[in-house]
Image (cartoon, rainbow, N blue to C red; front, top):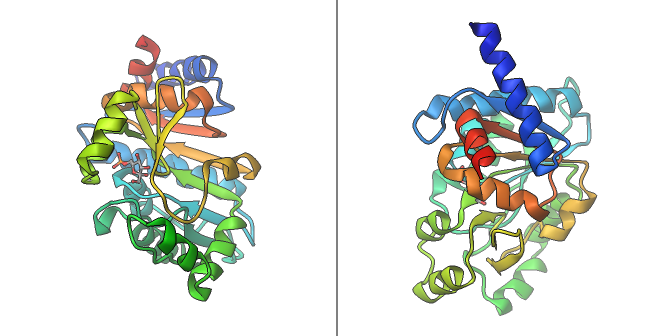
Length: 254
Ligand code: F6P
């Protein structure tokens, strides 16, 4: 029965890979909407993948969210050199402290036994603050590291769920509804075709930057995220999707 289960998941992996046109897909059993351990299983798959690619001098940029926090929970040393580095992918985008990229980066680095850099940017950022902030030496130093990122680990969320979680102003929520936002990643909101319909202003990785990064790893699961994941992959750049069985089945329904 165990072997059947494994075979079932590899069939799902192949189907998702073909349907969303992704280089590599890993599906873990379960539904992370209901069980925290499923997020940790996705985390373990992520750590194994990183162990197979990370070298000295790699810079790993990480986003926030509960899935990334679960990845941090199961982080382990990735390479013998201990010379790689963790950085947040972008400045704050409205998350609670435990789900912020800064917090997650510090935890990942502690578990892996390596260094990290943090980004301190007010959240949300006004246009005038943005210009001042990027020229602030301590922030600029971290931004240089982020610009050199070779690996990105990021989550995906359902657009309106994320807007609510971030206490987004009402007028922005209305705009998201009007423009039919379905999915969110990196502080960008996308419609069903994967077009950007709104963007949270902050420093760090911008969507275009993903094109030149060697390994972009997307980690998102749960039946509730099926549509969000499918929409993100209409245009979003990613080399590896790590998801769960419930999200995979939901994606295949659509
Ligand atoms: O806010 C950071 C972020 O990575 C979002 O870009 C993403 O939509 C969300 O967190 C995912 O959060 P969770 O893993 O808790 O669903």
